[in-house]
Image (cartoon, rainbow, N blue to C red; front, side, top):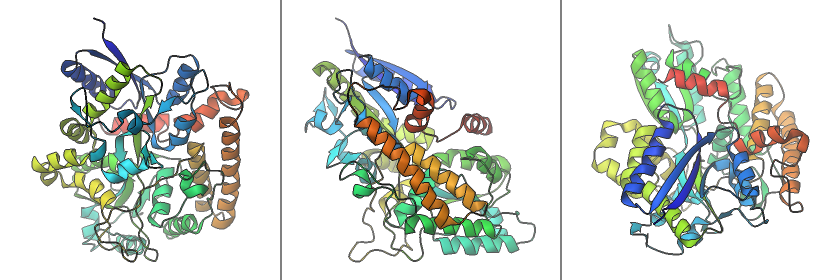
Length: 480
């Protein structure tokens, strides 16, 4: 009897062992469910979504595709060769079942903020696979030398700590750094309850208007500009320059680095290798605005529509299996991604993982509870889950490039209001172009709306720019 094939396509980030874990997961699944053959393929990070679009147009799409969080609208707009939607809702495909092929369904156990991000209109569109947020990492040796005993939680406290570090004898020239990447803009705006696009961040209908000069965005730009102006923020000059900000922290050129929770393993190792203490804290929030919640990032698994029943159930079984408590917990240990389900978090806690590795717990606590010092909106309990509904709109990756270029200019002396107003116009043009393409007549070119810029368009819109090629290479070198 022939086996049912499940084609799983994922972006290969080229980190050591990255694909090995995926291949092992497929083999382990086949041992439990021998009626299936899992074919995992690691695709080029830059062109992966373009490959999905081309495969769909050719009638050979994967069964499951792992796409980045900022590609939700692109995923919803991708089409089969006949013009029907390429992907179907995971929740609708599960259809209320508690188990599939004997594998318990875990949709109801997903930690709420992670589930919420990929839910539109009450419908879970895709299965979260990698979940991260933004955190603050501190060199405790440098902070203690400056007389700092507690990590800052608000931006006013960040400024005060930076001033203490600047006054400390023998301290670093700059106190703090972070990469110029869109995820931090989203985080800063989200903590204040701001939006990037209209229609409730694209969740009450297709986003048609961009606003990058909102009061929340300008407040963030002003905080950043002041820290840079006063000599506290280390501006490495690149976009996003993950590797250089990591290097600055590792070499103790700064006392604080803000980065992804995915960097927990890297940052702790950097501290160990270079002989200094480290503590991990929350992404700072406003001193004057109510804390509404923080943004998440990561990836999710999208299920191709129109599959035969056996293949669809096999794919759904695989999704539940990859997120059973053991597998989800082990994925967290290997990559420091936040555990996706309550069961996996509780398993890690029972096994003493968080007691032995307290840094790994911070991301989970950050996304599910209000910080102790946060000003809570009236009537909201202190332990309530904050709002996590991130933006969903076309050319999100291109939008991130626009805001990062704008901030680079502000750090170079440009007026924030003028520059971010200009950025809004640039981003609006990108969104208009994307929407015209996505809503255009069928069939449409799977390589993008402008045949003379196909590769550039899909590299920007569909692949996104979490890391440049140089960043990836340098981060791998730093963390081998």
